[in-house]
Image 1 (tube, rainbow, N blue to C red):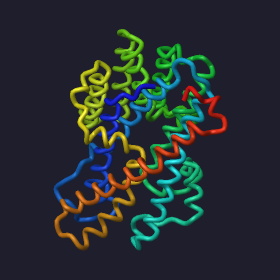
Image 2 (tube, one colour; image 1 turned 90 degrees about the horizontal axis):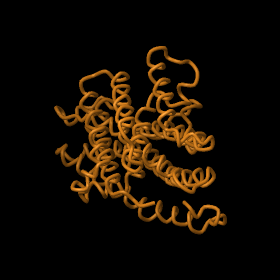
Image 3 (cartoon, rainbow, N blue to C red; image 1 turned 180 degrees about the horizontal axis):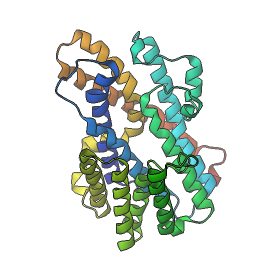
Length: 330
């Protein structure tokens, strides 16, 4: 599968915005801190929705052609869990050794619970607040696996209509059962990524445009605010630019780099970043410098994990696994 640089740009944009949101906005709320007064980046929280759209595109793409459900499951596991386990352990160690109890210290049992990635469903707190978005991702992968097994991915327009009807129905009636498992809160973002794939690769027509517009409207129905109107419109516009090859001119190296390290960066940045801000703020009076050092430190740590741990593990799992022949199409 050819790596699309424009997707790395979008990942970089999403990661950059999420970091700014946590450091400039969420930090002040969590710690009731008088920090970077007058500066906030609340729109950065919607970088997660952009990540969901990217996942919709990539996962749908990975299930095209000659593949199997087993290879898909193995690929997703090898991509998500090893890096997650490493980052969870690093976060646990740094926060617990930091002597900053307000940053969210945890017990060893909580760490073990977090290694499942679905700890929130068993009332086990997340070691890092950013982990909440991993469950919608996992549920989306499971749903895609089911649709693939049933042979329904070739009828994506029908699937889209049913899924959107359920999402809209849940907004009106609030289904007490199934809404969580069917991703009815964020499904429109995953679905739009799939529809954009059809437009870009399979020469989709006006049907895809109409369905994408309904995804956009559905997102606004769920979050009816002026800021969401602007942000969601921008996210969908970015994907349209990507779809029609108009993002190639914007493949800036900084965003490509952030896209390259985006998964470990997302997993590591929040609570470790908060620890750094708390400690640096006591010894450095310049708050801009505090943010710059924190941001740079987290990017460097994420690069270390990506380059020296994540990529070698992926290389091993996909090339030296005893069942390698079964997964050659990974």
